[in-house]
Length: 240
Image 1 (cartoon, one colour):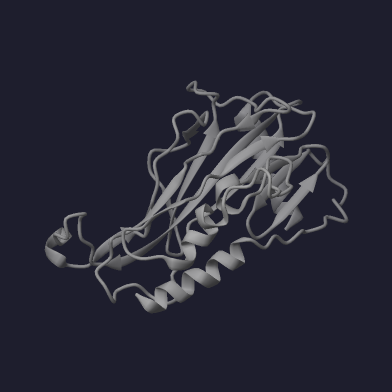
Image 2 (cartoon, helix red, strand yellow):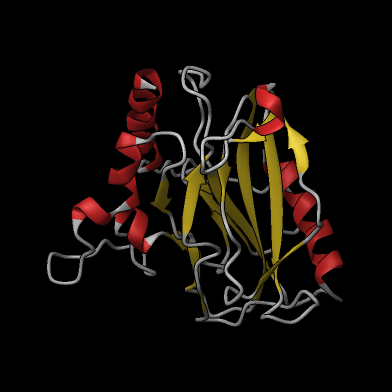
């Protein structure tokens, strides 16, 4: 597990970095107001301004600033510090929340990418699962916060390049997708993540961490969320 500890130290440092992508031209097409953000990239068009923050992961606040010494979580309690000493079965703080800092209502989708590997695991009592035979396993688990106002778009994840990808839509604790009101602060999607209880020596040195991002688009001018997301897909395809 020493190699995996070193890897998580590097991953934790990388997760704190944000790269800004400036959009200089939209061609000749109509541009809808959209926003997208993750720990690795960000782009914004128009006045839709959402911020993905994790107060107890790295101390970021809803407005994008970071806590001062007077209101900060103790550094040893931050998830980004806990992740520097990761081991099988460890649970750490990670609390992705979103604030709509704009004056516009907008549709919102959050995505959680969970790395998957074929490994042997054990339960909390140390009993081997599946007779100790390796099987495809999500390396991190979490519990959806029922107060987040988010619901799964599908009960099943999509699979892509060694990840299970879960997508969530904002429903305000209802059943149908609705816009996030301007100025609204969405509670964390979850509060902690737990590393799988992998049998010692089976974790790869290049193991990835759980990855959270979002996308948003104005709700005005569309007949509903399906119409809005179709436009988002068309526009984002033109921008990349």
